[in-house]
Length: 99
Image 1: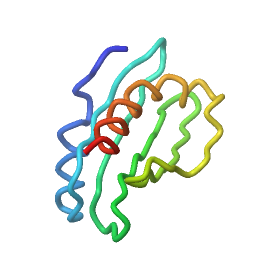
Image 2: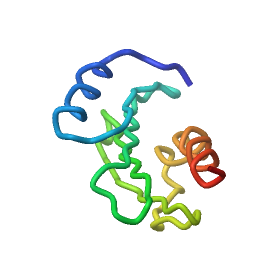
Image 3: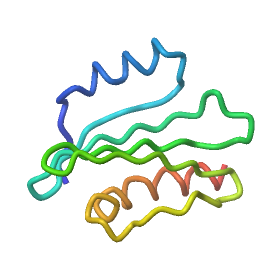
């Protein structure tokens, strides 16, 4: 996986303008480009929200809420998009639940 600066500054600026506390970055895997945003604002239940987006050719996105107790919304992680993102998401989930 290769990190890329494409749009990352613009996305982070937009998150802050909207009042979210979080991070957003793009990465590349195989021949696809993805964006992963992580934020925890507007959130009464101690959750992290992961917004995952894949650009061309599939152009899909999905939000996953992970609670402090480690539970999460179920998603179809068989799609290559989720398989590729899983390593990054899991790192943040592990740190969040452990704190």
